[in-house]
Length: 314
Image 1 (cartoon, helix red, strand yellow):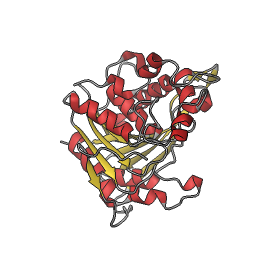
Image 2 (cartoon, rainbow, N blue to C red):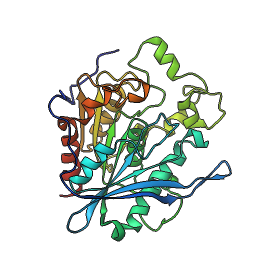
Image 3 (cartoon, rainbow, N blue to C red):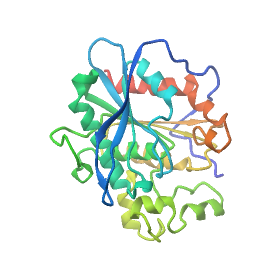
C-alpha cells in the first residue's frame, strides 16, 4: 500500500483504555419511522433509533450513518460508540438509509439523511433537541454520506420528502474512512485491488448509475463527479473532522485526504487524524474480531466528542 501523506494531519497512536459506557443515564427509543420513500415502485419505511441523554435543557443532535459498502445500512451498528457520544450530552439518532439493495443510488441516500435531519428538527421538543445544532457522523459508506450531506448544505437537488419547511442542513461533520472520489477508492492499493474497485457493474457503479448497470465508475466522469463529496466543497461548508486508519485495505486513506485538502483550500475548518495500525473499522463480520478495538479507544473517541462539543455546544 502506498504511504500516506500526513503533512496536514495528526497521527494518532490508539493505545490506552477502551471507552466505557454506563456513567450517565440514556433513554432509548427504537424503530421510529422517519420517512417512507418509494424506490423502483416499492415503498420503504426507514427507521431510526434515538438515544436521549438525561440532561437539562435541549441538547445538540448527532445523526449516525452506518457503513455497509453502499449495500446495507444497519442502524444497530456501533452501539457503544453511539452511547459514548450520547452520554457526553448529545441526542444520537442512528438511521437506516436506502442502499443498492433497495435499487437506490447516492441521490436517494443523501435525501434520506436530510429527511432524518428534518424529522429531528420537526420533533425537537419530543426528544429534547436543540434544532439549530445538528451534526452527521458516519463510517465508511456512512462517512461518504456524512461528507456528501455536509458539502451539499443548501443544494435543493438533495432535498425531498416530508418537513420541507425545515432545513436539512447540518452544522458539523464527522467522516470516518469514507470515500470522497468513487473512481479512486483503490488508488493507494496494488493493481489488482485498483482494478476491482473500477470493475463494471460493481457496487460503487450501482451506487452512481443504479441497479443493473454495466458501467464502470471510470466510464462517465461527469456522472461520477456529481456523486463525489469533494465536488461540492465550498467556503460555506460546516466544520469537518476526518479519521482514517493507515492500514485501511478497503478504502484508500488518500480518500479522506482529498476532501480534507479541498476543505483547507476553501478555508473551511477541517481536522484529519490518521490512526496508526488501524484498518477499516470493525471487521468482525469477516473474521477479525480485534480490528475494531483501535477505533473504540478513548484516544480516538475523545477527539470526536471534543469536536462535537466545540462545534455544537459553543
